[in-house]
Length: 131
Image 1 (tube, one colour):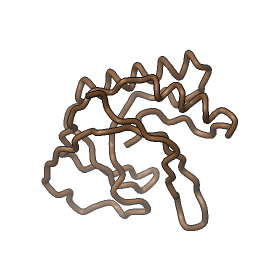
Image 2 (image 1 turned 45 degrees about the vertical axis):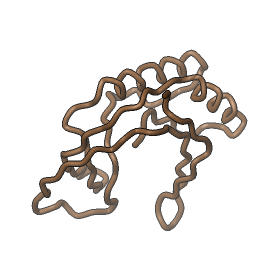
Image 3 (image 1 turned 90 degrees about the vertical axis):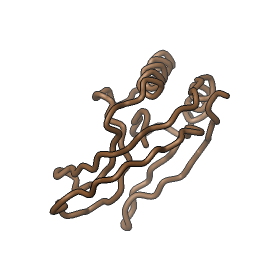
C-alpha cells in the first residue's frame, strides 16, 4: 500500500530519502479493509478500508511534510489508501462481500520498475513501527 508516491528519484538521492523515512515514527495500528473497487482507466481491481485510520492519515501528512522539507517532489493528490489485487482486469460483474484486518508492522521504501512483463517491486529499505 503506497503511503507517498514519489515517481522517478535519482539514485544519488536514495540515501537522503532513506534518512527522511528513517526519522519518522509510525505507531502500531490495524487497517480494516472491506471495500472492493475497480478503476476503469487502468483496469485495476483494488481493496480499500471503509474508513482511513487516523494513525495512517496522520503519518502520511507528517511524511509528506518531511519529504517536502527535504526537497523531494511527490504526488499531491488526496490520499486514497488501497491495495491492488489485479491488474489488466475486466470490470467485475459483482464484488464479493468480505472484511479483514491488516496489522501494520512496518513501512518500506519500494522501487517499482516496469518491463515487458509488467511491474516488478523491490524493497530498498524497511522500518519497524514504533513500539
